[in-house]
Length: 88
Image 1 (cartoon, rainbow, N blue to C red):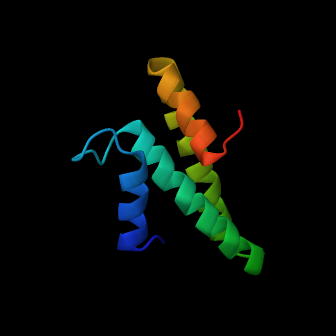
Image 2 (cartoon, rainbow, N blue to C red):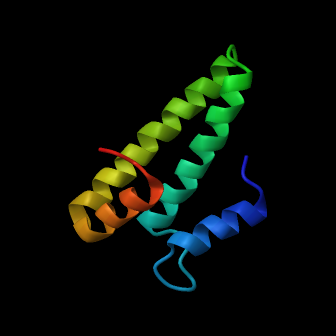
């Protein structure tokens, strides 16, 4: 789980304007950060099946957001994937 400060920093890095908290870029960044943290958790706790299921759901959700962003704003999509290190 992300702390409040981590969440604020992630939002600050990928927002479109000052009051932006729900744009696809922000949502993808937050989900990516959560996926990274949960991946580290699963490396320690290999048999945590419930968390693994949650991880798969987050990956699917991020994929949906990425498809939406690619369809509606190609320039923003390419910039975000480079910034987050996501390959598609």
